[in-house]
Image 1: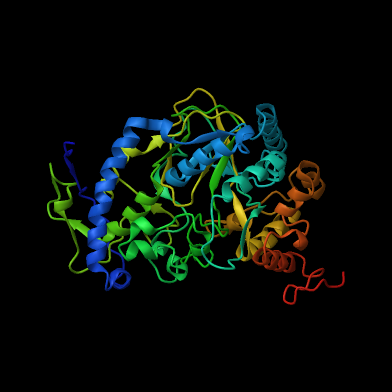
Image 2 (image 1 turned 30 degrees about the vertical axis):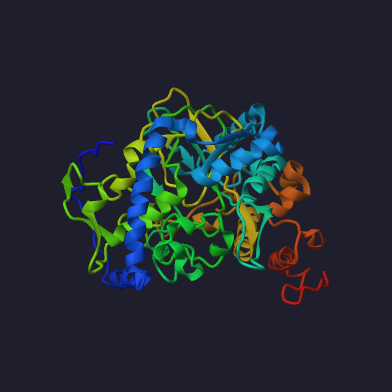
Length: 479
Protein backbone atom coordinates (compact mmCIF):
# COMPACT_ATOMS: atom_id res chain seq x y z
CA UNK A 1 0.00 0.00 0.00
CA UNK A 2 1.33 3.43 -0.91
CA UNK A 3 1.89 5.64 2.12
CA UNK A 4 -0.06 8.90 2.00
CA UNK A 5 1.56 12.25 2.59
CA UNK A 6 0.75 13.14 6.17
CA UNK A 7 2.31 15.45 8.71
CA UNK A 8 2.00 16.74 12.23
CA UNK A 9 0.03 19.96 12.46
CA UNK A 10 1.81 23.16 13.37
CA UNK A 11 -0.43 23.34 16.45
CA UNK A 12 1.42 20.83 18.60
CA UNK A 13 -0.02 19.55 21.88
CA UNK A 14 0.54 21.78 24.87
CA UNK A 15 3.11 20.41 27.34
CA UNK A 16 1.68 19.67 30.77
CA UNK A 17 3.46 20.11 34.09
CA UNK A 18 6.80 18.33 34.44
CA UNK A 19 5.11 15.84 36.74
CA UNK A 20 3.68 14.10 33.68
CA UNK A 21 7.13 13.48 32.20
CA UNK A 22 7.96 11.56 35.38
CA UNK A 23 4.65 9.66 35.17
CA UNK A 24 5.51 8.59 31.63
CA UNK A 25 9.03 7.48 32.59
CA UNK A 26 7.73 5.44 35.49
CA UNK A 27 5.00 3.77 33.42
CA UNK A 28 7.46 2.06 31.09
CA UNK A 29 10.53 1.86 33.35
CA UNK A 30 12.30 -1.45 32.75
CA UNK A 31 10.10 -2.22 29.75
CA UNK A 32 11.43 0.31 27.26
CA UNK A 33 12.54 -2.25 24.65
CA UNK A 34 9.34 -4.29 25.00
CA UNK A 35 7.24 -1.14 24.60
CA UNK A 36 9.24 -0.03 21.56
CA UNK A 37 8.89 -3.43 19.89
CA UNK A 38 5.18 -3.53 20.67
CA UNK A 39 4.72 -0.11 19.03
CA UNK A 40 5.98 -1.40 15.70
CA UNK A 41 3.74 -4.46 15.89
CA UNK A 42 0.84 -2.13 16.64
CA UNK A 43 1.52 0.13 13.67
CA UNK A 44 1.54 -2.89 11.37
CA UNK A 45 -1.85 -4.06 12.65
CA UNK A 46 -3.31 -0.57 12.43
CA UNK A 47 -2.47 -0.33 8.73
CA UNK A 48 -4.27 -3.58 7.99
CA UNK A 49 -7.30 -2.76 10.12
CA UNK A 50 -7.67 0.75 8.71
CA UNK A 51 -7.84 -0.74 5.21
CA UNK A 52 -10.44 -3.28 6.34
CA UNK A 53 -12.63 -0.61 7.95
CA UNK A 54 -12.35 1.75 4.98
CA UNK A 55 -13.44 -1.05 2.64
CA UNK A 56 -16.39 -2.12 4.81
CA UNK A 57 -17.68 1.26 5.99
CA UNK A 58 -20.76 1.21 8.21
CA UNK A 59 -21.35 -2.49 7.53
CA UNK A 60 -18.50 -3.33 9.90
CA UNK A 61 -20.60 -2.25 12.90
CA UNK A 62 -22.41 -5.34 14.23
CA UNK A 63 -26.16 -5.44 14.76
CA UNK A 64 -28.65 -7.95 16.10
CA UNK A 65 -32.41 -7.95 16.40
CA UNK A 66 -33.93 -7.93 19.88
CA UNK A 67 -35.86 -11.07 19.00
CA UNK A 68 -32.59 -12.90 18.20
CA UNK A 69 -30.74 -12.32 21.48
CA UNK A 70 -31.61 -15.88 22.58
CA UNK A 71 -30.49 -17.46 19.28
CA UNK A 72 -27.16 -19.04 20.25
CA UNK A 73 -25.72 -19.05 16.72
CA UNK A 74 -26.53 -15.41 16.00
CA UNK A 75 -25.49 -14.34 19.49
CA UNK A 76 -22.07 -16.01 19.19
CA UNK A 77 -21.27 -14.10 15.99
CA UNK A 78 -22.63 -10.87 17.44
CA UNK A 79 -20.61 -11.18 20.66
CA UNK A 80 -17.37 -11.81 18.77
CA UNK A 81 -17.95 -8.79 16.54
CA UNK A 82 -18.92 -6.52 19.43
CA UNK A 83 -15.84 -7.52 21.44
CA UNK A 84 -13.61 -6.55 18.52
CA UNK A 85 -15.46 -3.46 17.31
CA UNK A 86 -16.54 -1.97 20.65
CA UNK A 87 -19.88 -0.73 19.30
CA UNK A 88 -23.13 -2.35 18.18
CA UNK A 89 -26.79 -1.77 17.43
CA UNK A 90 -29.63 -3.83 18.85
CA UNK A 91 -32.66 -3.40 16.66
CA UNK A 92 -36.30 -3.14 17.77
CA UNK A 93 -35.60 -3.29 21.51
CA UNK A 94 -38.71 -1.18 21.93
CA UNK A 95 -41.58 -1.20 19.41
CA UNK A 96 -41.38 1.92 17.26
CA UNK A 97 -44.81 3.12 18.37
CA UNK A 98 -43.71 2.92 22.02
CA UNK A 99 -40.48 4.84 21.33
CA UNK A 100 -42.45 7.51 19.47
CA UNK A 101 -44.91 7.71 22.37
CA UNK A 102 -42.02 8.32 24.78
CA UNK A 103 -40.86 11.12 22.51
CA UNK A 104 -44.36 12.63 22.40
CA UNK A 105 -44.65 12.41 26.18
CA UNK A 106 -41.33 14.23 26.54
CA UNK A 107 -42.44 16.92 24.11
CA UNK A 108 -45.70 17.36 26.00
CA UNK A 109 -43.76 17.60 29.28
CA UNK A 110 -41.68 20.38 27.70
CA UNK A 111 -44.81 22.21 26.50
CA UNK A 112 -46.22 22.15 30.03
CA UNK A 113 -42.88 23.37 31.42
CA UNK A 114 -41.59 25.93 28.89
CA UNK A 115 -39.02 27.31 31.33
CA UNK A 116 -36.90 24.14 30.97
CA UNK A 117 -33.32 24.97 30.06
CA UNK A 118 -31.15 23.35 27.44
CA UNK A 119 -28.25 23.64 25.01
CA UNK A 120 -27.86 25.83 23.05
CA UNK A 121 -29.50 28.41 25.26
CA UNK A 122 -31.08 30.36 22.39
CA UNK A 123 -32.63 27.25 20.81
CA UNK A 124 -32.55 24.30 23.26
CA UNK A 125 -32.16 20.83 21.77
CA UNK A 126 -30.21 19.01 24.51
CA UNK A 127 -32.55 19.49 27.44
CA UNK A 128 -31.70 19.60 31.12
CA UNK A 129 -34.37 17.02 31.78
CA UNK A 130 -33.87 13.85 33.78
CA UNK A 131 -37.34 12.89 35.00
CA UNK A 132 -39.70 13.37 32.07
CA UNK A 133 -42.30 10.59 31.64
CA UNK A 134 -40.54 9.18 28.57
CA UNK A 135 -37.15 9.04 30.30
CA UNK A 136 -38.50 7.42 33.45
CA UNK A 137 -40.47 4.80 31.51
CA UNK A 138 -37.52 3.95 29.28
CA UNK A 139 -35.08 3.39 32.14
CA UNK A 140 -37.52 1.03 33.87
CA UNK A 141 -38.62 -0.83 30.73
CA UNK A 142 -38.15 -4.60 31.01
CA UNK A 143 -36.89 -4.90 27.41
CA UNK A 144 -34.14 -2.33 27.90
CA UNK A 145 -33.10 -3.94 31.18
CA UNK A 146 -33.04 -7.36 29.49
CA UNK A 147 -30.82 -6.05 26.70
CA UNK A 148 -28.53 -4.36 29.21
CA UNK A 149 -28.03 -7.69 30.98
CA UNK A 150 -27.45 -9.35 27.62
CA UNK A 151 -24.67 -7.00 26.52
CA UNK A 152 -23.10 -6.58 29.96
CA UNK A 153 -22.60 -10.32 30.19
CA UNK A 154 -20.05 -9.95 27.41
CA UNK A 155 -17.85 -8.54 30.17
CA UNK A 156 -16.13 -10.91 32.58
CA UNK A 157 -13.96 -10.63 35.67
CA UNK A 158 -10.49 -12.12 36.04
CA UNK A 159 -10.40 -10.92 39.65
CA UNK A 160 -11.57 -13.60 42.04
CA UNK A 161 -14.50 -12.37 44.09
CA UNK A 162 -14.80 -9.05 42.20
CA UNK A 163 -17.90 -7.26 43.46
CA UNK A 164 -19.61 -6.48 40.17
CA UNK A 165 -22.84 -7.90 38.77
CA UNK A 166 -23.94 -7.55 35.15
CA UNK A 167 -27.10 -9.45 36.12
CA UNK A 168 -28.40 -6.42 38.00
CA UNK A 169 -28.49 -3.31 35.77
CA UNK A 170 -28.88 0.02 37.52
CA UNK A 171 -30.18 3.25 36.02
CA UNK A 172 -28.02 6.26 35.28
CA UNK A 173 -30.15 9.33 34.65
CA UNK A 174 -28.93 11.35 31.69
CA UNK A 175 -30.60 13.84 29.39
CA UNK A 176 -32.72 13.81 26.22
CA UNK A 177 -31.67 15.27 22.89
CA UNK A 178 -33.99 16.43 20.10
CA UNK A 179 -31.60 17.84 17.52
CA UNK A 180 -33.03 19.92 14.70
CA UNK A 181 -32.02 19.87 11.03
CA UNK A 182 -29.09 22.17 10.15
CA UNK A 183 -27.98 22.38 13.79
CA UNK A 184 -24.22 22.80 14.15
CA UNK A 185 -24.04 23.34 17.91
CA UNK A 186 -24.21 19.75 19.21
CA UNK A 187 -21.56 18.07 17.07
CA UNK A 188 -18.27 16.77 18.46
CA UNK A 189 -14.98 15.49 17.13
CA UNK A 190 -13.40 12.09 17.88
CA UNK A 191 -13.09 11.53 21.60
CA UNK A 192 -13.37 9.07 24.48
CA UNK A 193 -15.24 9.90 27.67
CA UNK A 194 -14.45 8.85 31.25
CA UNK A 195 -11.30 10.84 31.85
CA UNK A 196 -8.27 12.25 30.07
CA UNK A 197 -4.85 12.25 31.78
CA UNK A 198 -6.32 9.84 34.35
CA UNK A 199 -5.56 7.00 31.91
CA UNK A 200 -1.84 7.50 32.55
CA UNK A 201 -1.97 8.48 36.22
CA UNK A 202 -1.24 6.13 39.09
CA UNK A 203 -4.20 7.47 41.06
CA UNK A 204 -6.51 7.24 38.02
CA UNK A 205 -6.75 4.09 35.93
CA UNK A 206 -3.44 3.00 37.40
CA UNK A 207 -5.16 2.17 40.70
CA UNK A 208 -6.74 -0.88 39.07
CA UNK A 209 -3.96 -1.63 36.58
CA UNK A 210 -6.46 -1.24 33.75
CA UNK A 211 -3.86 -0.72 31.04
CA UNK A 212 -0.85 -2.37 32.68
CA UNK A 213 -0.31 -4.88 29.83
CA UNK A 214 -0.09 -2.06 27.30
CA UNK A 215 2.57 -0.19 29.29
CA UNK A 216 4.51 -3.46 29.65
CA UNK A 217 4.74 -3.85 25.87
CA UNK A 218 2.12 -6.59 25.70
CA UNK A 219 -0.86 -4.81 24.19
CA UNK A 220 -2.05 -8.03 22.50
CA UNK A 221 -2.77 -9.42 25.97
CA UNK A 222 -4.77 -6.37 27.07
CA UNK A 223 -8.43 -7.32 27.62
CA UNK A 224 -10.85 -4.37 27.30
CA UNK A 225 -13.66 -6.54 28.71
CA UNK A 226 -12.23 -7.42 32.15
CA UNK A 227 -14.46 -5.62 34.66
CA UNK A 228 -12.17 -6.35 37.62
CA UNK A 229 -9.66 -3.80 36.24
CA UNK A 230 -12.31 -1.07 36.22
CA UNK A 231 -13.64 -1.24 39.78
CA UNK A 232 -10.87 0.68 41.51
CA UNK A 233 -10.54 3.34 38.83
CA UNK A 234 -10.81 7.07 39.47
CA UNK A 235 -11.83 8.65 36.17
CA UNK A 236 -12.02 12.23 37.44
CA UNK A 237 -9.08 13.46 39.51
CA UNK A 238 -9.68 17.14 38.71
CA UNK A 239 -13.44 17.66 39.09
CA UNK A 240 -13.74 17.90 35.33
CA UNK A 241 -16.76 18.97 33.33
CA UNK A 242 -18.93 16.12 32.05
CA UNK A 243 -17.48 13.41 34.26
CA UNK A 244 -19.53 10.32 35.05
CA UNK A 245 -19.57 8.95 38.59
CA UNK A 246 -20.91 5.51 37.62
CA UNK A 247 -19.04 2.65 35.99
CA UNK A 248 -20.75 2.29 32.62
CA UNK A 249 -20.04 -0.98 30.87
CA UNK A 250 -21.63 0.62 27.83
CA UNK A 251 -22.50 4.14 26.91
CA UNK A 252 -25.60 4.27 24.78
CA UNK A 253 -28.63 5.94 23.39
CA UNK A 254 -32.08 4.79 22.46
CA UNK A 255 -33.35 6.26 19.22
CA UNK A 256 -36.70 8.06 19.28
CA UNK A 257 -36.72 8.89 15.57
CA UNK A 258 -35.42 7.69 12.22
CA UNK A 259 -31.78 8.77 12.02
CA UNK A 260 -29.78 8.09 8.84
CA UNK A 261 -26.03 8.76 8.67
CA UNK A 262 -25.22 12.45 8.52
CA UNK A 263 -28.41 13.45 10.32
CA UNK A 264 -27.02 14.27 13.74
CA UNK A 265 -25.92 10.69 14.25
CA UNK A 266 -22.93 8.89 15.73
CA UNK A 267 -19.59 7.96 14.18
CA UNK A 268 -17.14 5.48 15.69
CA UNK A 269 -13.69 4.05 15.14
CA UNK A 270 -14.46 0.31 15.38
CA UNK A 271 -11.13 -1.19 16.44
CA UNK A 272 -11.32 -1.10 20.22
CA UNK A 273 -8.13 -2.82 21.36
CA UNK A 274 -5.93 -1.18 18.73
CA UNK A 275 -7.13 2.39 19.30
CA UNK A 276 -6.76 2.04 23.07
CA UNK A 277 -3.21 0.72 22.78
CA UNK A 278 -2.28 3.41 20.27
CA UNK A 279 -3.60 6.44 22.13
CA UNK A 280 -1.91 5.25 25.34
CA UNK A 281 1.48 4.64 23.68
CA UNK A 282 1.42 7.63 21.33
CA UNK A 283 2.86 10.11 23.89
CA UNK A 284 6.00 7.97 24.26
CA UNK A 285 6.98 8.19 20.57
CA UNK A 286 7.99 10.93 18.13
CA UNK A 287 8.67 11.04 14.38
CA UNK A 288 12.13 11.66 12.99
CA UNK A 289 10.67 13.59 10.06
CA UNK A 290 7.52 15.59 10.71
CA UNK A 291 6.18 15.21 7.16
CA UNK A 292 6.77 13.39 3.91
CA UNK A 293 5.78 10.22 2.04
CA UNK A 294 7.15 7.94 4.77
CA UNK A 295 5.77 9.89 7.70
CA UNK A 296 3.68 6.95 8.98
CA UNK A 297 6.28 4.27 8.35
CA UNK A 298 7.60 2.42 11.37
CA UNK A 299 11.18 3.49 10.59
CA UNK A 300 10.19 7.13 11.04
CA UNK A 301 9.10 6.68 14.66
CA UNK A 302 11.27 6.24 17.73
CA UNK A 303 10.71 5.89 21.45
CA UNK A 304 11.60 9.21 23.06
CA UNK A 305 15.04 9.04 24.66
CA UNK A 306 13.91 11.49 27.32
CA UNK A 307 10.18 11.54 27.92
CA UNK A 308 8.52 14.95 27.77
CA UNK A 309 5.33 16.06 29.52
CA UNK A 310 3.09 15.93 26.43
CA UNK A 311 0.05 13.64 26.49
CA UNK A 312 -1.66 14.06 23.14
CA UNK A 313 -5.29 15.12 23.45
CA UNK A 314 -5.41 15.00 27.24
CA UNK A 315 -5.65 17.96 29.61
CA UNK A 316 -6.29 17.78 33.38
CA UNK A 317 -9.90 18.63 34.16
CA UNK A 318 -11.11 18.28 30.58
CA UNK A 319 -13.02 15.08 31.34
CA UNK A 320 -12.50 13.57 27.89
CA UNK A 321 -9.66 12.25 25.76
CA UNK A 322 -9.62 14.05 22.42
CA UNK A 323 -8.23 12.52 19.24
CA UNK A 324 -7.32 14.03 15.89
CA UNK A 325 -5.57 13.13 12.66
CA UNK A 326 -2.70 15.46 13.57
CA UNK A 327 -2.11 14.08 17.07
CA UNK A 328 -2.93 10.43 16.30
CA UNK A 329 -1.97 10.04 12.64
CA UNK A 330 -1.70 6.23 12.51
CA UNK A 331 -5.37 5.82 13.42
CA UNK A 332 -6.23 7.32 10.00
CA UNK A 333 -9.37 8.80 11.48
CA UNK A 334 -10.31 10.21 8.09
CA UNK A 335 -10.82 6.58 6.98
CA UNK A 336 -11.69 4.75 10.19
CA UNK A 337 -14.34 7.01 11.74
CA UNK A 338 -17.41 5.46 10.16
CA UNK A 339 -21.05 6.52 10.64
CA UNK A 340 -23.34 4.02 12.28
CA UNK A 341 -26.02 2.62 9.96
CA UNK A 342 -29.50 4.13 9.90
CA UNK A 343 -31.41 3.56 13.13
CA UNK A 344 -35.14 3.80 13.75
CA UNK A 345 -37.34 4.49 16.77
CA UNK A 346 -36.68 1.81 19.38
CA UNK A 347 -33.18 0.84 18.17
CA UNK A 348 -30.51 0.83 20.91
CA UNK A 349 -26.92 1.90 20.16
CA UNK A 350 -24.29 0.80 22.69
CA UNK A 351 -20.53 1.32 22.82
CA UNK A 352 -17.65 0.38 25.13
CA UNK A 353 -16.48 3.26 27.37
CA UNK A 354 -13.11 3.31 25.56
CA UNK A 355 -14.57 3.41 22.06
CA UNK A 356 -13.51 6.45 20.03
CA UNK A 357 -16.68 8.17 18.85
CA UNK A 358 -17.96 11.46 17.48
CA UNK A 359 -21.22 13.18 16.59
CA UNK A 360 -22.05 14.68 13.19
CA UNK A 361 -20.76 18.25 13.15
CA UNK A 362 -23.85 19.37 11.28
CA UNK A 363 -27.28 17.75 11.22
CA UNK A 364 -27.72 17.51 7.44
CA UNK A 365 -31.01 15.59 7.56
CA UNK A 366 -34.58 16.73 7.09
CA UNK A 367 -36.15 15.63 10.40
CA UNK A 368 -35.26 15.79 14.08
CA UNK A 369 -32.62 13.46 15.48
CA UNK A 370 -34.01 12.48 18.88
CA UNK A 371 -32.40 10.13 21.41
CA UNK A 372 -32.54 9.20 25.07
CA UNK A 373 -29.10 8.74 26.63
CA UNK A 374 -29.39 5.35 28.36
CA UNK A 375 -26.11 3.64 29.32
CA UNK A 376 -25.79 0.08 30.63
CA UNK A 377 -24.43 0.10 34.19
CA UNK A 378 -23.75 -2.95 36.38
CA UNK A 379 -24.32 -3.11 40.09
CA UNK A 380 -21.14 -2.29 42.01
CA UNK A 381 -20.53 -0.75 45.41
CA UNK A 382 -19.61 2.59 43.81
CA UNK A 383 -22.65 2.50 41.54
CA UNK A 384 -24.89 1.74 44.52
CA UNK A 385 -23.51 4.77 46.36
CA UNK A 386 -24.27 6.98 43.38
CA UNK A 387 -27.68 5.35 42.97
CA UNK A 388 -28.58 6.42 46.53
CA UNK A 389 -27.82 10.06 45.63
CA UNK A 390 -29.65 9.77 42.33
CA UNK A 391 -32.72 8.27 44.01
CA UNK A 392 -32.92 11.29 46.31
CA UNK A 393 -32.67 13.60 43.29
CA UNK A 394 -35.50 11.69 41.59
CA UNK A 395 -37.78 11.89 44.61
CA UNK A 396 -37.14 15.63 45.06
CA UNK A 397 -37.13 16.58 41.39
CA UNK A 398 -33.50 17.72 41.47
CA UNK A 399 -31.06 17.25 38.58
CA UNK A 400 -29.15 13.96 38.53
CA UNK A 401 -26.08 14.34 40.79
CA UNK A 402 -23.50 14.45 37.98
CA UNK A 403 -25.46 17.33 36.41
CA UNK A 404 -26.34 19.25 39.57
CA UNK A 405 -24.23 22.27 38.66
CA UNK A 406 -23.52 24.28 35.53
CA UNK A 407 -20.64 26.76 35.53
CA UNK A 408 -20.43 26.48 39.30
CA UNK A 409 -24.10 27.33 39.81
CA UNK A 410 -26.84 24.87 40.77
CA UNK A 411 -29.22 23.83 38.01
CA UNK A 412 -32.89 24.55 38.73
CA UNK A 413 -34.10 20.98 38.28
CA UNK A 414 -37.70 19.79 37.84
CA UNK A 415 -39.07 20.14 41.36
CA UNK A 416 -41.94 22.34 40.21
CA UNK A 417 -42.44 20.74 36.79
CA UNK A 418 -46.02 19.83 35.95
CA UNK A 419 -46.49 16.12 35.25
CA UNK A 420 -43.23 14.91 36.80
CA UNK A 421 -43.38 11.13 37.39
CA UNK A 422 -43.03 9.47 40.79
CA UNK A 423 -42.39 6.05 42.26
CA UNK A 424 -45.74 4.65 41.11
CA UNK A 425 -44.87 5.57 37.53
CA UNK A 426 -41.63 3.57 37.77
CA UNK A 427 -43.58 0.63 39.15
CA UNK A 428 -46.18 0.90 36.37
CA UNK A 429 -43.45 1.00 33.72
CA UNK A 430 -41.15 -1.76 34.97
CA UNK A 431 -42.53 -3.45 38.06
CA UNK A 432 -40.11 -4.76 40.68
CA UNK A 433 -37.20 -4.95 38.24
CA UNK A 434 -37.66 -1.32 37.26
CA UNK A 435 -37.92 -0.26 40.89
CA UNK A 436 -34.68 -2.08 41.76
CA UNK A 437 -32.83 -0.46 38.88
CA UNK A 438 -33.71 2.93 40.39
CA UNK A 439 -32.79 1.93 43.94
CA UNK A 440 -36.42 1.95 45.03
CA UNK A 441 -36.68 -1.72 46.05
CA UNK A 442 -34.10 -4.05 47.66
CA UNK A 443 -32.49 -6.92 45.77
CA UNK A 444 -33.21 -10.50 46.79
CA UNK A 445 -29.91 -11.81 48.11
CA UNK A 446 -31.17 -15.39 47.93
CA UNK A 447 -31.33 -15.15 44.12
CA UNK A 448 -27.60 -14.39 43.80
CA UNK A 449 -25.71 -16.48 41.26
CA UNK A 450 -22.52 -16.69 43.36
CA UNK A 451 -21.10 -15.94 46.77
CA UNK A 452 -19.50 -12.74 45.45
CA UNK A 453 -22.78 -11.58 43.95
CA UNK A 454 -24.58 -12.34 47.20
CA UNK A 455 -22.05 -10.21 49.08
CA UNK A 456 -22.51 -7.39 46.58
CA UNK A 457 -26.30 -7.49 46.92
CA UNK A 458 -25.90 -7.43 50.70
CA UNK A 459 -23.68 -4.35 50.50
CA UNK A 460 -25.94 -2.59 48.00
CA UNK A 461 -29.01 -3.22 50.14
CA UNK A 462 -27.14 -1.86 53.14
CA UNK A 463 -26.18 1.29 51.23
CA UNK A 464 -29.63 1.94 49.80
CA UNK A 465 -31.79 0.72 52.69
CA UNK A 466 -29.76 1.16 55.89
CA UNK A 467 -32.92 1.20 58.02
CA UNK A 468 -33.88 -2.27 56.80
CA UNK A 469 -30.49 -3.96 56.28
CA UNK A 470 -27.32 -4.00 58.31
CA UNK A 471 -24.82 -3.26 55.57
CA UNK A 472 -21.80 -4.23 57.66
CA UNK A 473 -22.92 -7.47 59.24
CA UNK A 474 -25.37 -8.55 56.55
CA UNK A 475 -28.20 -9.00 59.05
CA UNK A 476 -31.70 -7.80 58.38
CA UNK A 477 -32.39 -4.95 60.76
CA UNK A 478 -35.56 -3.62 62.27
CA UNK A 479 -37.75 -1.41 60.14
